[in-house]
Length: 479
Image (cartoon, rainbow, N blue to C red; front, side, top):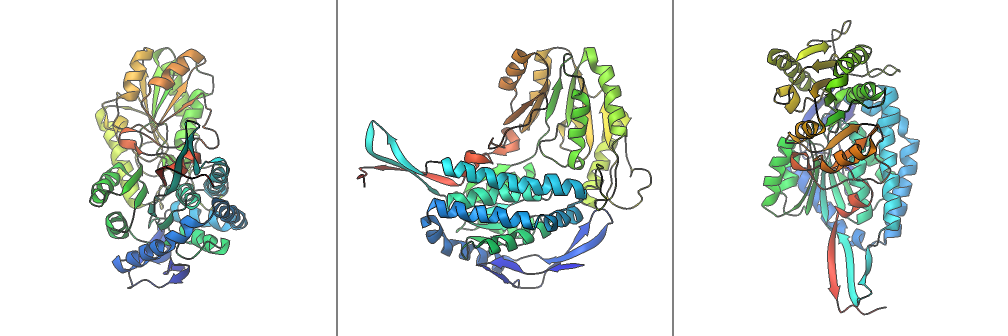
């Protein structure tokens, strides 16, 4: 049993203001794997005060020095990568091999991309040749509250911390109480890297406690949140009282549009992408739209691929998927699978209950629904589990209509060998990201959505810009 009861505030590990223990559950076993403390208002206030006090000095630190500290951070992160993988595997159920490669790898990837972007970014530059005495200065927003989820812990922590650090913001991180161990290890790494006191602070807590206190705090200048659309709405309302800058990365219900000229591996690729991380990804291709000419074969292929996806404990090596994060999520997913059955979608793989041979742990059967329509609950709600919904379509115009008929707008996917059609689709699909024929976005590309999938962008120069204010100066005297 791991015990992590202290918070990282003003460069030191400090005891919480009062005892408020919380058990972290290993979703593979349903048993407690750690005990942490949840903070209260006194802890939140202390962390914000430390960040506020450190802000002037950190803003004044040359960008090159801030970048050098992030470079040191990456070096230490790499040395402690196995600890990080073990933490994420046990607390949120990522299979250990996947935790080592994808979950840990996402952190170093994003930090390096921020270093590359920051080195090329003009934080202080002339307006233009027409105005030699005008200056555009990009400076830190201020104290940033960073609220991160449990599903891709280091992916989200580094997307926020890396950008805030090079931008010159000081910060208070509140990780998900469901997966806090990786964040506490990350705080140790930040400390070892030598970030000045108060630049980075960590307070554990839940959304209604520390989360709400941060979003309403008068000395917090910005909130960067990743999580549910429901929580994002509440944060926006709370932050409006003090006119904070708010960055939201929320849910999704991505359409994977497969035309009849798609490559032979398109359906298999789409199913496996959906099942990755046990379906717990906001950008998962959870609606598979298939053109009618190949629809029957696509359903057969999807059912076969899903039936071969194995499920097992996170501690075991292999290419299986692990459990979902907790009992609440498991029950929600079971209810939605049953809802799909009740609404008349055709169950071609998986279904309710645990997979055979697994009587304990929050395991979900890899599930595929066929013959659905876009008004069914399984086609509209973000299930956040290994559940794929297949919908037939006839024409390109119909595919666009179905794909865009959702309150979400994070990522859509297109599979076709007709490059002109692929480009047309990319232009009209209402989402912050579009990926074509299995090609993921390149290093430094922005991550984020539109509509109820949020606002702002993370990653690369766009991610840095979200933590910056733009200051226009007239009458600048060249030095």
